[in-house]
Structures are given as structure tokens and as C-alpha cells.
Length: 462
Image (tube, rainbow, N blue to C red; front, side, top):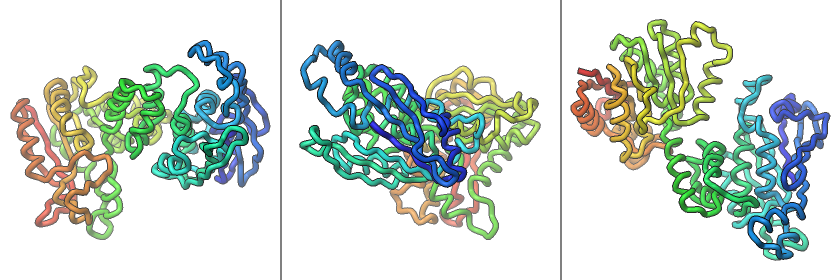
């Protein structure tokens, strides 16, 4: 089994730093089913290729399978496992490149966080679904995909093997995680026993990209060996990941911008409006729920009136991005003492959410399924009960100014977008049920008919 990863980002040999495998050495790693080798067929300033070669001990693998399944027939010894990239290669990749998959690099943190020009080649992949399925799985992730059927002599009467080449500008950690998940999905077979722990592996490795993938149902089903209960658990976990808010522009907002030459982008205006509301509240401690990559947290840290600042997000990847963006490892100690990052969901009661003067849900509620809004309401307004809550969300009436049809949403992950009347009705109901008053403001340049692109509700507890 062979996998190669090539980059042309100069100096290309930095690929070895990210993989934590030196280009001048051939390294071996023992696996329970054989030996993995890492070496570099080429390593220059302009182009570097790392190869992962897996030598499978077919007899050892077959004996282990026979003990687990009771199947000791000849087919367990004569198969394509030593030749075609399958779940065995995914397991080896996960272990050999574990640090690179985490996206962490002490030597080059900025490089680990950057998208690189990458080319991934797999000479033979067993694929139940053929080249079309390879394209369906990798193209939505931003890859340029080449896939063609290749007969594997002696094994491939039905041409189920595919030669795969992927090209794209991708963060190396993301590329490795995608391969770790999707190789066994293509094969639709795992060589080891699948238990509930596979759900954790799928969610940790799939994270944000899997939650938004158009074939996520097939991916979860095959990765979890068609175990229905595990699939349901995975979908519930992925729904939580999808709820992670993003305070930056949606693709539509970013492309359209704000009217007026030289005006600020909408996400900057939105942060300014939230900061004004917090300043008027007199808050000294702020909880940013759905903090995303940390832009609001950065602005809060710049204001010394905020002595306790916490960012919470359901997505561990978002929290990693916030750590990098805020340069947490190099932050001055006095500034660092005021900040905490925690993983948590706005739809589950969490005692860590209590005790703050103010809480912010900036572009978060539209990422929740409408049926989960009552749970969020109970957690934030009923249990945490900060003195002030600031909520921003898109104004659906403004969408036509972005060229969107009536049914279109600004972001693929939005579950809904409300007009001003619907948002007001929801907010006034929440305020009445939990002892708050609410006032409304538009954020961004307002249209005479459609209003502002973002609507904001500021809740003050009676």
C-alpha cells in the first residue's frame, strides 16, 4: 500500500517539519498487521514528496481475523490487503502522522495553520462505488480529483480498484484527517472490530468539514460499519459541531460587502455594535458563546474594562483556531490571565456559563435547528442568567439586496434566517418568560424598505 504527499510551497522541505519526519532518513513503524515506512522520493527547495508505504503481513492479519470471526477460509489469506490502500493504511497514517493530523507545530505554527499546495497520490484504492464516488467524497472538500479504474491483476475482475490523484490548496492537517476518514469509507470495510469508540474518532477527525459534507450520511454509515445506533450517535455529535457559530462574514456578506466606498466590512461593524452594547451595560465579565475564531474575544481583550473574558464553542477546531489567532502561547501574562477558552454547547446546561455580567451570541442562533432553540433559551436565559445578553442574527428581509432568492440563506450551515417581525416575536417571548427587557437595533447600512443586514437584540434582566 502506498500513499504520497507532494508540495511545491518553497521551501518544500518544510513538509518534513510538519510531518515530523526528516527527509534524509528512512523510518519504520511497527503496526499490529505489518510495518509502515516513511521516506522521501524527492526533497528539494521547489518540490518535496513524502511517501507512506505499508507492508502488510497477510498471514498475521488473517490469523487475527480468523480468531475474531471464526472464518479460517483461504480467502482470508488471499486478498488485496497487501496491495490496495484501505482501512489498514488509514490506521497507519493516523498513528505515524498523529502530530501532523493535530495541526500543531511548535517550530512552525503559522505554517501548520496555512493552506499549502498539495498533491496526494494513491496508486490503488479499493472503492465500492468507483471513480464517481471518489469525486463525490473529495470534490466538496476543495480538491481537484483525478480518479480512474485500474485492474489489480489476479484480484480485480470487477474493476473495483481506483487510481486516485488529488490536488488542492489545503491545510496539511485537514488533508490527513480527510484521508484518515475517507479511505475506509471508499473500501466500505474495516479490518478491525468497530465499537462505540469509532464515533469519537469520526467526529474528532471529521469535525467541521464532515458536518457540512453533502455525503455525510454515506460517510458515517460506511465508517461505522453500518451500525445504526453508532450512526445516530455520530449524527447527534455532528449536529453539535454544526451549531458552532461563526462571527465572521458569511460568503454572501463577504462577497457583497457593505455599501459605501471605504466602509468597514459587516463583521467589523457587527463587532463594534456588540462592543457598544456591552459598554452601555457596564459589564466587567463577558461570556462569548459560539466564539468561533476569536475576533470578538480579541476586541474585548483590548478594552481593560473587561476583567474576565471567556470564549465557549462546541467545535474543538474553532477553539484551536482561536488559540492560534489570539497567539495564546505568546500572549503577555496580564492579558492571558483575563481570558479562558472552554468547549461547550449552548443547548446543554453548563455550570461554567454562570456568573457573568453579560453573554453574547453573535451570529449563533441561526446555526441551531429551530427545535433546539428552547434548549438554548433554558441554558442561557434560564440557567446562566447573565445581567445582559446580546444576540445578533441575519435579517432575512435584506437578503434580496445580496441577490438571493426568497428561499436562499446567506450561509450553507444556517438552519433559518428570520425577518425583523419573527426575530422580535421570538426575542420578546424569551424576555417575558425569563424576566428580561429587550430592545432592538439594526447593524450595518440600512435599506429604507428591508432594514439593516444584521439585527441585534439586547436583553437586560429586570
